[in-house]
Image 1 (cartoon, rainbow, N blue to C red):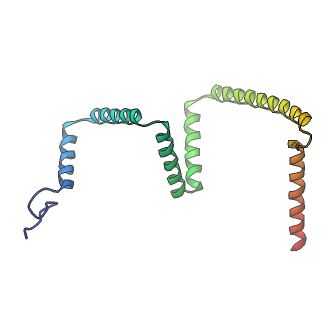
Image 2 (tube, rainbow, N blue to C red; image 1 turned 90 degrees about the vertical axis):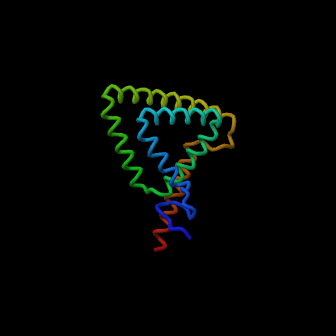
Amino acid sequence: MANKRNNNDENGKMTVQEAGRLGGEATSKNHDREFYEEIGRKGGEATAESHGREFYEEIGRKGGEATADTHGKEFYQEIGRKGGEATAENHGEDFYEEIGRKGGEVTQNNNNTNSNNNDNNNRNNDSKMSREEAGRKGGEASRNSRSRKKNNK
C-alpha cells in the first residue's frame, strides 16, 4: 500500500477535492473580482431563464422558514432596527411625510369603500352580523371569560 501524501489517493493520483482546490486557487490568481461578478451574473440570468417565478417563490419560502427556525425574535428586532436606521439615514423628512400622506389616502379610500360595502351588505344581508356588532360581542365574550376565570380562583 502506497503512502498517502496530502489528499492523493492510494495510487498516487490526485483526488477530486484536491484537483478542485488547486483549480480554484489557479483561477483566483488569474482573474479579478469583475470576472467572478460576470460569471455570477451570467449564472443568475441562465437560472432565471430556465426557472419560472414559482422556483424563486419556493426557494424564498424555504429560506424564510430556515431563517425563522434558526433565529429568534431578537434577530428580527435587530434587523428591523438596522433597516429603520438605514432608511432614516438615506431619506429625509420629506420622504416620511410623503409615505405618510400616501398611506393616509389609501386608508381613507379603503375605509370609504368598506363603509359603502358594509352599508350595502347590511341592507342586503340582514342575517349577517356587522363588524361593529361582531366586535361588541367579541369584547363581551372576552370580558365574561376573564370574569369567570377570576371568580374560579
